[in-house]
Amino acid sequence: MNTTDHIHDAFHNRQIQVVSGKKYCVNPLTDHVPITRPELLSQIIDEASHLINHADADFLIGEEDRGGYICSLFSVPWQKPFTLTKWNPSGFEGELHVDFRNAYTKGSLYLNGITPELKKAVIVEDMIDTGGTIIAMVHLLREASVEILDIFAVARKEDYDGSERIEKETGIKPKVLVAFKSGDAVSEVTWRYKTK
Image (tube, rainbow, N blue to C red; front, side, top):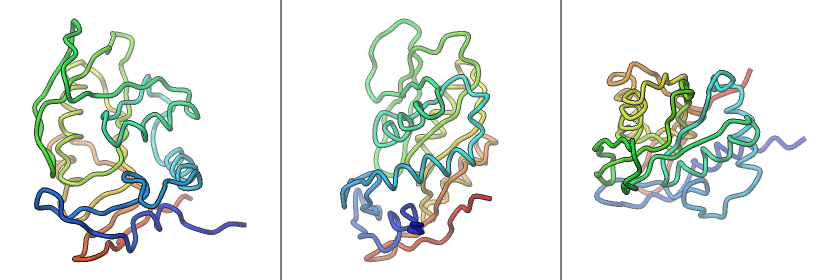
């Protein structure tokens, strides 16, 4: 029996680099350094399936950057369609948009294709830092009259209090599998979700 905790190992003792004046953890999930292994992705899918209220969701939603591929991972095993918010407008009829700021950038997010039968969603992201991107996604979904059943991210950066900000501004407490702090040189896992 393999007892390796791939999720813990993906975020513990990883190199820290400074990006846009912020500490950034280089990891195999979002940066593919070292290369992303299927064992890590399988463990994420398995554990998230126990944690997230996905059975009643009509669809999943992520953001087109790093979180987009995480969102698409869940679409097949959960048999749920998914969509992604975009950073650039398409100009399609009914397009929604909201301005946002996260730890590394600011801009606008755009959302298309939300039809009346899509009433319940789960937000799926790679990581929570300041929470800005997820809060913008919540605003877009609520503008489209979509109920958010859960907010999920694989990891939470303890350095920026993003989970607390999300809960305070949206009323929804995000669920994560692992939390870590960014030291001066390497990261340190501070909390780990355990399946029952």
